[in-house]
Image 1 (cartoon, rainbow, N blue to C red):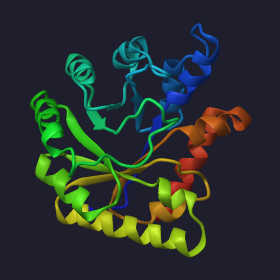
Image 2: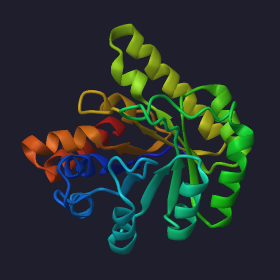
Image 3: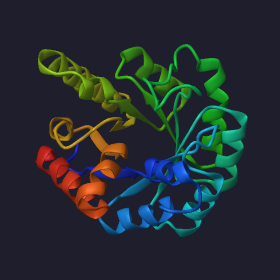
Length: 244
């Protein structure tokens, strides 16, 4: 599984956050997605939350109709979200933890504790030919449970690595290395995401098992100053430099 290829998935949720702060349809996250693709994005990620705080059902309709690259639909393990995924059939669905009070996803999914609840969701998505990813911490038990439950891939949560400094960050980086290597040994594709920025992406990119990074908030924030295409291209260049 380890190779020199690496993909960037651009999360457009926070274009929708800006739109929803005032209402209306501007700025349009679908327009941002199309621009991201033209700038080199290999895929688009969108999280349709239960409370619809950013991405809307209409956004998903438009993304499915207009994208020429895979859509990765982030979703909670609820019957409502499952029905939406089965109706639209995105290339992949990433099951994430979701709490109404959180500002953003906090920590990975507890696959071990929620196994009995999650197993039917994973099975029904896979039966619909939707590739299933689970967003988890780089923990051995969670990785092994993800394999057992039938996930095609996992996305390892990089938030702790980003937030720490010095020796603590180095320890988190080693934890991600070990987690990615375990995924490879279990024949699961492994992605990375959450909080990554220009400073932190290079060392993560050097871990050869990672095939895709899903990055959103930082890219949208940088786009205010430099434009979305520039922020994506700079991030992709740093990723490629790290992999090289």
